[in-house]
Length: 385
Ligand SMILES: C[S@@+](CC[C@H](N)C(=O)[O-])C[C@H]1O[C@@H](n2cnc3c(N)ncnc32)[C@H](O)[C@@H]1O
Image 1 (tube, rainbow, N blue to C red):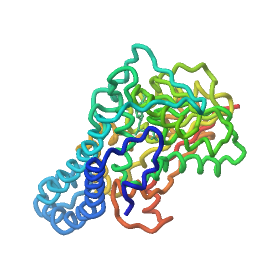
Image 2: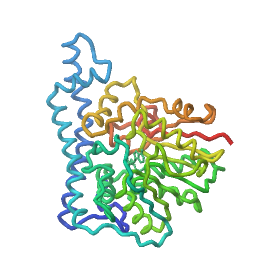
Image 3: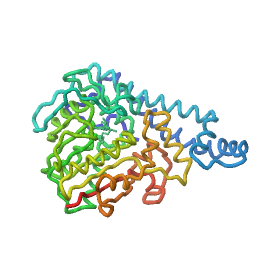
Image 4: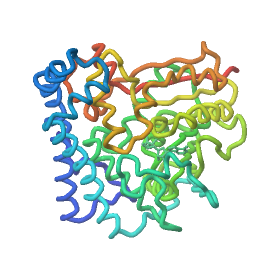
């Protein structure tokens, strides 16, 4: 098991003092216990007790995620599990917040050459502002005014705990995975300008610096405090990034500004109306021959109603309202409607331990069909030259 001390330090990170770290260690360990021990036990409860009871009562085994939910919802073990999981999620944030409250806001040393541009009177989209996604208090857009970096500091430390350290010491496993896959898929593609939509504090954005040395990196997000923190973080790490506040549905950049437009674990947090608009915006922003790359949660496998039921808990208990619908959307069809030619669109699944940990935690052989259903899904599309 990884440990909270494995998160790599940088000029903006707030870990807190001894008592903070003791609380974070407890939250981290509890979270691991919930996902590694309690979560897989649901399968045993379902197979041996809840499923057979449902079949006896209804005269047929459960065949849909809704029926599995009805069967499990009546079981005392499952009620305990969802309560423990929700509590562990809330503890993650509450173990991180006191140190951030006590710390001075992160300041950018302004050494790497990146920039920060905040929009005046910016109104974030309702699907982000109306709810604290994955229960992070205040959500992505909490902003206490000029200089505030708290949402970024809470997110950076909190995500490390949330994902049990499996995002790597820099919380950048998804960016690394996507950049590596893109380089192997398009070895001759050498983008000079890259835009990362929904960049947050830049965890994934910065992974493109070593992958494409010399490329000019841009990151756009809704959250002002996330961006201030991301700017300070990138500067302290010596990576120039141009951070911009904005909405990925209608960004402030001119047509054909970028060679590569990416997003990492963003689309599942948007909405059924916003997602097609974001892909259209990507098409507008790309130069001819440019590439769009999105990496996010895998699609639901409808042949396994139990797995779908368990994953849909993110919507039921973790403030992820769009998670359920997102995973049923045919992204390739949406990309085609956004203007990309059908033969210039491809999808793939990239296996990753962090997906297994956060969703099923069943042990599956690497490279098996089951493992491939547990990866991140990738959507790549190239704009006509
Ligand atoms: C789960 S975080 C991922 C952050 C980052 N991409 C990463 O890999 O660490 C999702 C981010 O998407 C941002 N986001 C969601 N919808 C957005 C939109 N319409 N425009 C800009 N940012 C958005 C949120 O503010 C949040 O920072």
